[in-house]
Amino acid sequence: MAAIASINANQAGSFAAPITTLSTSDTITFRPNKKQLLVARNPTGGSLTLKIDGDGGSTVNVPGVGVVNVAGGYDIVLAAGASAAVVLSTISAYCKGEVTLTGAENAVVQLFDL
Image (spheres, rainbow, N blue to C red):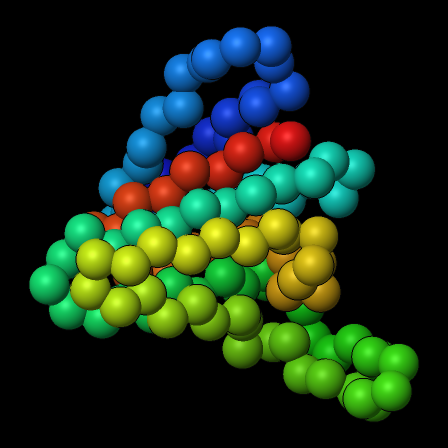
């Protein structure tokens, strides 16, 4: 299990943006006071499902929807060769506590602090 470091994107000009290859289970640090963008790409020949799961999430009340169970994590399906991105504050209920990324071994990710 590796801790994926975030990349400070609040810089002028170009900057280093390292790519991390996921193992079976990795962690990220969600910072609610920052705008964070998680970018994932699937370089494999098959579909992968990236699960973002904070160990502190259970249920949340969503206006107009009601109670939503977030304990199972948030899934992002990555088709072969595809990429996807998510602003973590938009799924903050899934990012409470220690946040683990699973289910997408060999996908590559970058976590930007914007």
